[in-house]
Image 1 (spheres, rainbow, N blue to C red):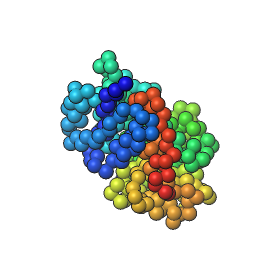
Image 2 (cartoon, rainbow, N blue to C red):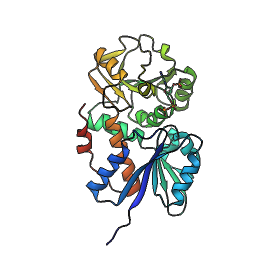
Image 3 (cartoon, rainbow, N blue to C red):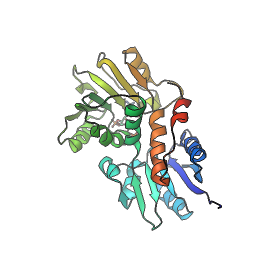
Image 4 (cartoon, helix red, strand yellow):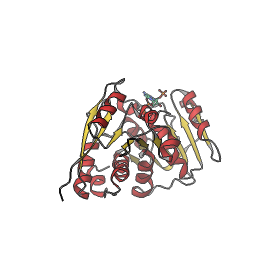
Length: 274
Ligand code: ATR
């Protein structure tokens, strides 16, 4: 049987550094699924138009990255439960009936990398989440589902951290504040969900806020360790990771959402030694 190739893409600004196309090309090769995956750069203000154009030309799905994840959420007709909780969308699905479905695989991807690939135990852990923007919002529901003892959100703009914590605080201990709100507390897991690493900047973290063996995870991926990763190594973290594993795992989850086929991730995970 002759297959027509289905078209997918990652849309963002900037998007030229995204490694998603090579990851999805490898998934297509590994699974034999007829998937073609491209990059679309949309200048801010042109997201909705670019989306309409992609749909009109027969595109089947999009990965949404910076800075359009909130806008994508707003444009969807239906949302997967995990996307509704996060209020940000990284995966769009153009359904045959014309509806646009939104999902968020970022949190699932991060948790899969931490708990399955890296064997990090989050249940009962004290977690520091840096940042309160789209990335932090995207991973928070999946993080809370792992039942940490406490999540403290620290953000440059304290108000955004307060708001985000307030929205999720139910049965779990979750607090928020500025970078000066850490007090003398120390943490088992620190997740950098700020975009500071992209600007080679480091959030102002106090000395000695890591528990012995603490895990530090930067959602940013880069060929060299980020400033946050350097800080973590100097502070004696037990395990320091960049966001490559999360990128691969969220891509696999997205591929599954789109195709109903779960691609193996081991060879891609091994590509970048950490
Ligand atoms: P993203 O989707 O990457 O989260 P975003 O929604 O623009 O993008 O959020 C960026 C996050 O990084 C925010 O938490 C931002 O802090 P503010 O809420 O105070 O803006 C944080 N951030 C960006 N640059 C930073 C820097 N140089 N130092 C510390 N935090 C920074």
